[in-house]
Length: 201
Ligand code: CDP
Image 1 (tube, protein in one colour):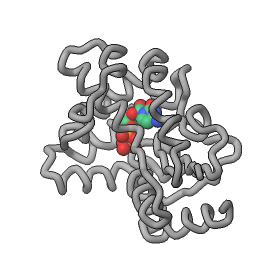
Image 2 (cartoon, rainbow, N blue to C red):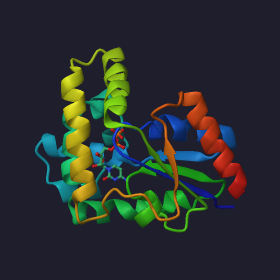
Image 3 (spheres, protein in one colour):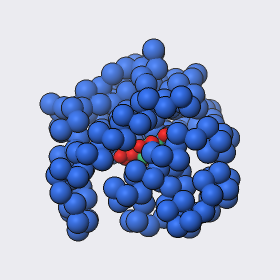
Image 4 (cartoon, rainbow, N blue to C red):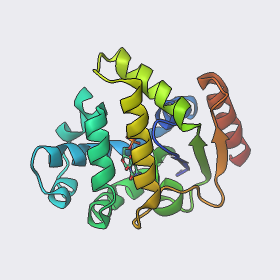
């Protein structure tokens, strides 16, 4: 049986961590859709055409710590504004969402464009300063050479671009449950998300 959980929100809101925990809890498959845009952005940084790259992503493109750098995040946010790039990635995401056994997808347009009929929609957010601090700690732990100021600037620039683009802008679906994790530990955020999903089951 298909059961789709759509998780959207701004950069570094904790969508990935919450999605993984939920998927493990319910035994659902998880797709980090940001990886598709990051992989496309990385190919563009290497000189490829954005639309060709989006149509020809391979398993290899979707692996490696190189996808997590702020440079690739910025490139992802730029290619993500191109409607042709988004169109290239739609079918895969929709197919994943309706697979048997349940699916969790996290991104920017999952509850609005990819899965408007998702059984559960969450919009996860936190203040930009808190999100940037969490991402700074994450990148520093991976020995990436970043400063707090750079990470905050990256988060703000991507949020502004993602929210203002014409093609599938980042916005909470009208029927999404808002989860502001500014004052929550990751355990509290996951527990809250699980409670919302149980109510819908
Ligand atoms: O992990 P973080 O929240 O920093 O970013 P991500 O989810 O990996 O997404 C990277 C970029 O891909 C975003 O800034 C968006 O521009 C784009 N994206 C999108 O447009 N639509 C999605 N469904 C997922 C990501």
